[in-house]
Image (tube, rainbow, N blue to C red; front, side, top):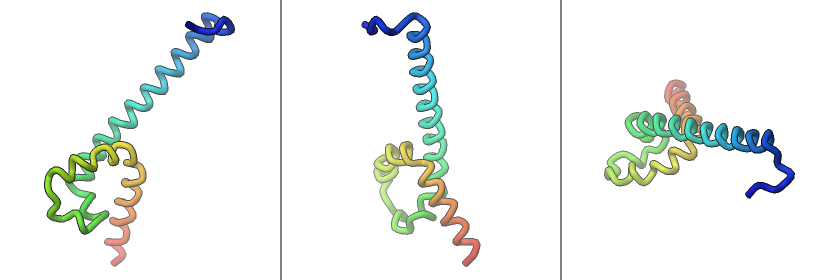
Length: 87
């Protein structure tokens, strides 16, 4: 299963790194889901005016992208809010 080079200590290290990576991915997706709820209810219309009046299915379609790219969308949302304040 493991190459002979890996010892018991290095196996534990590999498992620890894998567990940490999966934990970080889970936290990232959880934050993305929380962001999705806020973004769909308040932010998406501020970022893109064309979204107004979109069917409910649209919001399901943007779920995967929102989960993956929530930091980018958060930045755009914040920029849209700051430009509204300055207008």
